[in-house]
Length: 313
Ligand code: TXA
Ligand code: MG
Image (cartoon, helix red, strand yellow):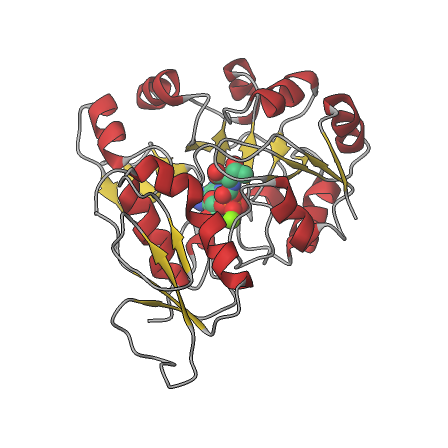
């Protein structure tokens, strides 16, 4: 059992002692450790059962810390940070020697973001080190958007969960490689492609890979509930006894066991409820889950990406 509390000072003490704390962010809960301490970082990989080839995002509380962990910051990066930090945007930078190789899985570039959650910002600003934090779920499972989600799967390995309430955005941060030309989006997330293109005033490339990616967390079969999930119309596992639960958007599916992402068709509300819906369906007495694609725009793209990885076909 973890201590579930709002005590930021206690969280800071645990982190300073080299242990882990689950932290709230605006996207999903993270499993945090001192990013400059390779042993603390190794504990993160162990707790999640995450392969060491999948690098972690470093979280900072103030842009003034950036120069410590990077060798240079481009004009485009500055533009994006000015517009979207703190917020659900992760940028890649050439890493300084302060960042241990275990954090980046040996890559030259480090992924950094400033999360937009008052408690976690306060925590980060009180610490003399940044926090490495992947989503606080067992590797491959749905990301947690509430403290109770973290407790249910990682409660036995995390000493403390800093409870910051439900996550407002609900899908992970967008990951951008701003040093490539054109600029590359490596993971669709809380900041939309449209927002990034407008800010930079240029078209970006979406390079999301599903097998052996430069953002390996984008592996296929990620974000998956334990119950098999299918696109609507796929008849796998349908038989006389099979019970299906539905993940619906704006009434696009119906059934006895149904989780409605947003009855008014609001993509922002749907994103905030997506992982909660997948977890809820996973807990119902059903054999399979069905879902339909969301509109392929704005946050709908990031949600379709997650659903694609969660669905069996
Ligand atoms: O919203 C988020 O980003 C959440 C919260 C906790 O901040 N974090 C999160 O972390 O989603 P995680 O570890 O579940 O996903 C991070 C993704 C992975 O796909 C990883 O491969 C990629 O970021 N990544 C991390 N460092 C990278 C790097 N140096 N180069 C390329 N991809 C990287
Ligand atoms: Mg994750």
